[in-house]
Figure 1 (cartoon, rainbow, N blue to C red):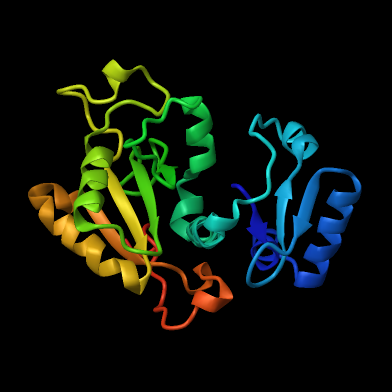
Figure 2: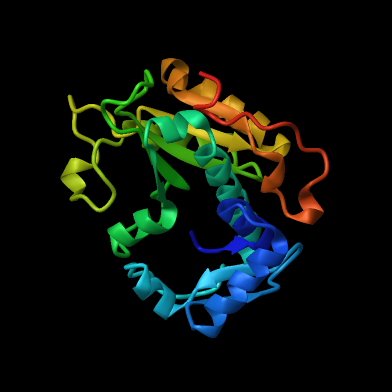
Length: 236
């Protein structure tokens, strides 16, 4: 992930806010992480170059991008909620972040190409009926146009190759699609557009699932008027 806010870090580590602040100070003193107030709400924390190296990651070190703070928080909230679900743990599912997908592309993403916000991989052999599937995860805070949303859905559902594969493997006739389904986690403002885009797909729309974002997904100035959470994989 590009970074998390203090309350999300506390949730991830199952500690209180005071303990989370203490951990951040320790990491900062060791040069492993940096933190600061970047926008509404609590402080953010992110890995430095040394921290990334210690974790075996080759990402470019940088604080979370200011224009994307709301989206980064929402995506982290989706990941936290999903990873807390018993079905996720029981099936040993794996979250593959946009940052990891982007690194595999090595800068080869076209101007009109689209990366999902994450993938969730369900290993073969698990007890769930969807074992072996790969899901594309989309976090929608603000609505795109219906045509653009429909085009993104079609791209996600038609793709056969991994991100970073050669162009000839991206869409191969007769090969099973990479994403068994696309899961959209939406704000109330975006849900209508996403629903209309799914309807425009016809039969393919059966592979698109729409859920509400978790209540914790929103920055403080955008938290009003949200609904309850319904995370895929928890109620099947």
